[in-house]
Image 1 (cartoon, helix red, strand yellow):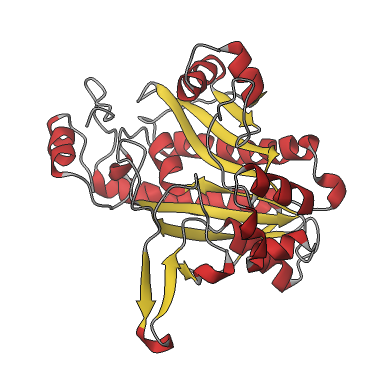
Image 2: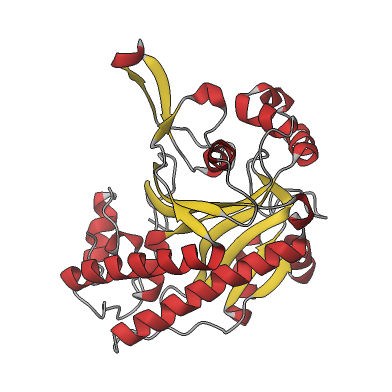
Length: 336
């Protein structure tokens, strides 16, 4: 419970039922902005996958996955997805989608090892998107261009919510600030990675922190990333400054995906070269999948941010410790 933030004199500007209506409006509006800006088409996506395919996400490499067996397929073992990063790339190849076009979907997951607090829930809901690019577009310039397009959609959403509710006014900067994890470490060598994120985001309001997954000059990582989807030199997180919680607030993790060389290099760096024999990883190494860029954008995170909520449980239904529920109620935070 030490990680729970309880803002002083907090009071939601809208009640529970109006919050539910607002959540739908936000989701409907933003997915249209995202699809238009990035030229995406909505598709259906799996809730669980066969672990033998290598399609499930390893996240930071330590999280346990939720798994079960299927009676109808000889007790075949399957896993709840942790994200759709790899599945989307396979789907783009299967659908034969050309460069400049892509897909998005609603991704729902269960992350059993999540540390529960204001921002983190066992239940994950996000827009997962993926777009086919050319080999020449595997560049920092194209990454920044795509981040700017997404940020403009986020800013348009903020303006939309501000028009809907006079009592809820959230302003974010006109432009997003770009910085690498190495530059950030050099700027704040005595701070932890999360403290660095707080410091830089408080200063600029909206930041894209690039190059996450590899080791910094100190030998430490800024944060963990699975070695087999993002290219660690061409990825990052979109982070906003949350005035309600007085802290950095990540809304998206994204990146240009690994090519054959990056896949082999990163698997080796993480000490798991044997994963190169899994279906998905082998397809990338053998250049049988398209070059892509993609990411996830938190649905409840965006709703929480622009509705100025103090806890993610105010905008999504999940399971919380009884002590947290009581503590929130005592501070006027009503979880769904």
